[in-house]
Image (cartoon, rainbow, N blue to C red; front, side, top):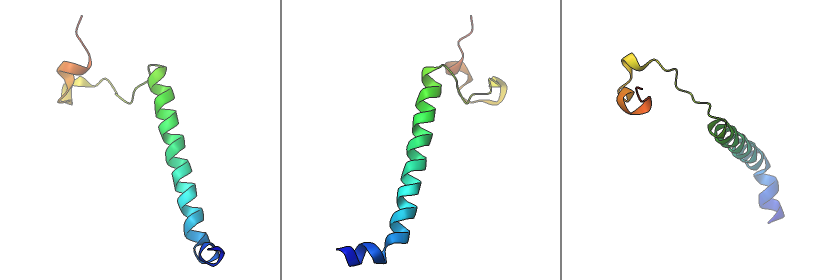
Amino acid sequence: MLEWITLNAGTLGISLLLIGLVALIILQLRRDKKKGKSSCGANCGCCPMSGSCHKKA
């Protein structure tokens, strides 16, 4: 088992790094959603979802 870990140390390290980055991105997206932030630019003229995203008052 130890031999397998040493042979694949680079792959394991890169994999753990990528998993960590994806987890941080997901956490940031969740925090932004809770704060009411969005990636929407509010340019509804060219958006196919314009009727359901921003309700007109």
